[in-house]
Length: 316
Image (cartoon, rainbow, N blue to C red; front, top):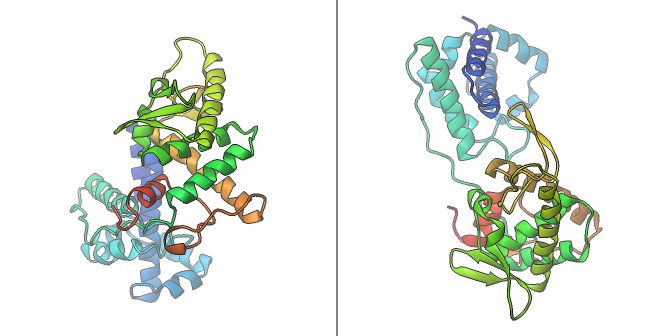
């Protein structure tokens, strides 16, 4: 059976079973990488070198992809070299993509699911899980400068206001996305003495800096407007969507609570926009990071930001 036909049938069965769309996309991406690797192996009769991957003509690759049989993808000899080879990111559009632990796991899981569906031998992990990428040189000083920058230049963009408030939380404690999504409005209060806002954290209440207090107050005002526009009981979660969006085939209006994945996606999008502005010279550059290393931008990953602040000298 041709691999393209088997993969198409597997993806169709996955969708019919009610699997989430991200899961379907993950299987499609993983199996397409396996298909590409098998076709490259057919062309070069060896494990492809990065130069060969980059130099292969698309037409020649497409011809070989059409010839690949599903048994080739499930052959233990193939998975033995494919899984560690793909974990280097050789098939990715850029050198940093496709190298995460999640990507490595997704490839093995997708091949295992395809094998199970066809009644073939199960695919096992055949390589060590790649280490997380090293933290970027962002320190509390750099993060504080970014907070000041956002506070000094108010934006009509509601997501930028929320980004500033999210960075304020990171200055208080290095929270994970699920911890952020558990915060409610009751976790923010006004300090009677200084009239600045305080944030509840694992170690008690933390008084925010003047800039941090301003950004959090701005976000609370925006959040109140968004939540008041909803019908029914108002959510208590601190982080809510600033615009309507599609989720699971339905439209979720602005003001509804964000889930961890949605919060991470929002951070990446708006941190990237801020980085573009920093690169263009619109804003004052951020100060140097750890060890004097340049820190001209925020990391485009919440986990990298968290690790950089929380564990400066080791990867988690």
